[in-house]
Image 1: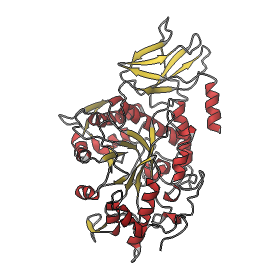
Image 2 (image 1 turned 120 degrees about the horizontal axis):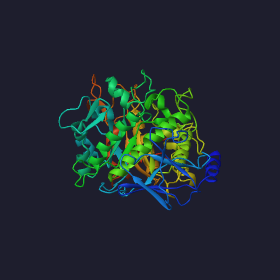
Image 3 (image 1 turned 120 degrees about the vertical axis):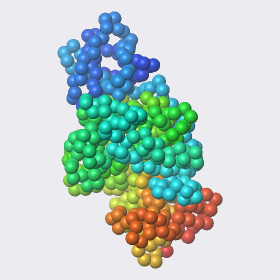
Image 4 (image 1 turned 180 degrees about the horizontal axis):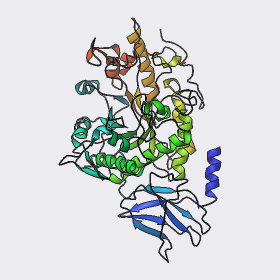
Amino acid sequence: MWIGFFLFALGTQLSPFRVEQSGNDLVIPMDHLPANTRLFEVSPYEDPTNSRGKQLSIPPGTKNALRIPASGRENHGFYFEDIQGKRLGQTTFVTKWDKSKDPEWGLPKNGGIKGLQVQMFDDALALGIHHAALNLNLSQLVRLPAREGDDTLKVGETTLGFRHETFEALPIKSYTDQGIRVYLILLAYQSGNTDLDRLLLHPKMRVDAPNRLGAFNTTTANGVLVYEWILTQLAKRQAHPEGKFGRVAGWIVGNEVNAHDEWYNRGPATVDEVVGDYHRALRLAHGVLAGSGGPGRIFASFEHHWTMRPGTNPKRSIPGKEFLLKLLTLSKLHGDFPWHIAYHPYPENLFEPRSWLDKLAKNSPDSPKITFKNLDQLASWMNRPETLFQGKPRRIILSEQGFHSPEGPKGQTQQAQGYVFAFERTKSIPQIDAFILHRHVDHAKEGGLSLGLWTNLPGQICSPHQKKLLWQVFHDAGTANEEPTFAPYRLPNPNPGTSPK
């Protein structure tokens, strides 16, 4: 309710306007303004609500629109002041691009929801996946100092080089050629190089961050410069007219950002600070991708806490729904853009694969958690008018979730039951494009969880040993053999509170 009132109040000051890119220019409409209005430009690292920015000159006689050079400003924002210095509405960023294409351009057709975070390429092909998710650590894409032949960026006295060989070693084209859609999870780990970390990681990131995983530095001029440059290097390769490097269907910005202390660390912070920083990173990613003319969609990443907090400290985690509401508000306030949801509806208890037993997953839009038991609540909520983009629902992918196989004779059966329940729930929701399983092989350093389709070799971290029951179930999902394979593992009663025998 407060969001609607806030937007209404802003609308009484100035109707929303659109900044468009036309060729080499940005076009800023002027015909809706009172006389003697002043125009200001805000850089992307500045606070779009409170930063004054710099005033631009409006040539005398300008009536319908002002055209200014676009180069270097594609991700900048603009706002107006009246003669008394009062803001007329909010900062608006570029919201339409000449080069925008169908996000499906050049991508393999979506053949079904089945996906995997792949460890073994040949096995993934044998399993018949349609989606693959790959982690991409941006710290590993930058070389200090640059080498001859690198694409470079000058930052002060430092020259950065893009490690093209690191990116091009990813099997993106191999997947694309096999009709598999690829999603890149954009991450930033501490590199151990102080100069690089200062540029790439949020300046308030904890030195002792739990997973060495930080928020992107979008709060300094040099941080934004480096972030945009890395994304531009990635995007231009994806826009190659002949698909030389394959195609990326989705760019997932960060990981589980509502649990930010663990997975997107920018130090202890308020909700406004965390979401404000993330909104900036998400918008910049969209701007670079849209400007490149390449395919794909931008996704925001969330774990399964919905109206309850992932942790106890309000400055270290945020309920997913609260985060999304604030993100939607900022997005619409400053010129809405097409971002989508990468959700992780793990079972409530990670060691209990049978999510129909979840007690905190309620049949309510205010459920404490959203897991596979009540996954329809997420899709319903994302179909509300206030969440839509240009009248259409934002897409959803399930980009990471897994099912533990407990020890004992029934463990692998319970894992298969959990997957069957989740797969059929997901398949019944048309708004969800992908269900990407984590993991391919059990990992010895995953807190005691055994989430893989394969066991790991004893004494090894994640070397494959033996196929589990889930391997065949996963193989047959989405095929003509799905029904007979799923039947022994399916709930005998559609009531989610009933346990299969």
